[in-house]
Amino acid sequence: QKEVEQDPGPLSVPEGAIVSLNCTYSNSAFQYFMWYRQYSRKGPELLMYTYSSGNKEDGRFTAQVDKSSKYISLFIRDSQPSDSATYLCAINAGNNRKLIWGLGTSLGVNP
Amino acid sequence: DVKVTQSSRYLVKRTGEKVFLECVQDMDHENMFWYRQDPGLGLRLIYFSYDVKMKEKGDIPEGYSVSREKKERFSLILESASTNQTSMYLCASSSDRGRYGDNSPLHFGNGTRLTVT
Image 1: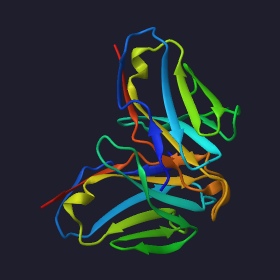
Image 2: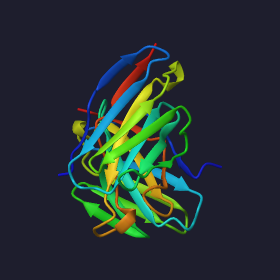
Image 3: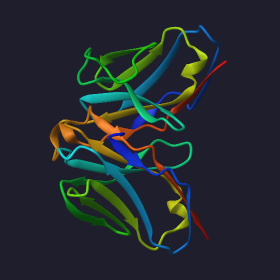
Image 4: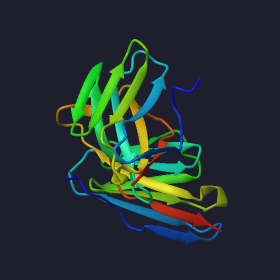
């Protein structure tokens, strides 16, 4: 079993839809969880950073961590064509030299 | 904003050539990283450095070396390029100071797409 599993998609939604992106992980000791967004031909950029369990909201984006289920989610409300990108989850396994990456989910938002 | 700059966006090299990929960050970050990104394999760590002249192997160091002579600059060297090193190379940096200490998030450059023919 991989340490982090992420469905690669692609996911295609109409503009305005609510999008749910997910990752599962195997080690209950993980505590730091990140979502990065990567546009085509660009480097990943940090979108959300969550420590331990719970929700974190930033504008149209909500990151959720369920440690009991070892499941993390990123919700995008009122999705826009500009949200079309690949979304990568990353989990910190002790320090930032030990990041474990999901493979990324490709999202397309259609106008 | 943190800026991580990679010197080349696209590079085409021949098998056996020595290749240098350069990365510069402007935020006085202690840590710098080199990743490669391939479809179906995701991001894989090649090397990282936590201080000037210090380096540690990541998950796939074979065929690569690195150099960090100054804090802001981290170079990746392909001693003898091979076709299986065709990939997107991403440099990143992070700080050990601040709210999350050594769990601080990484800041990436825009990548160098290297093709070895």
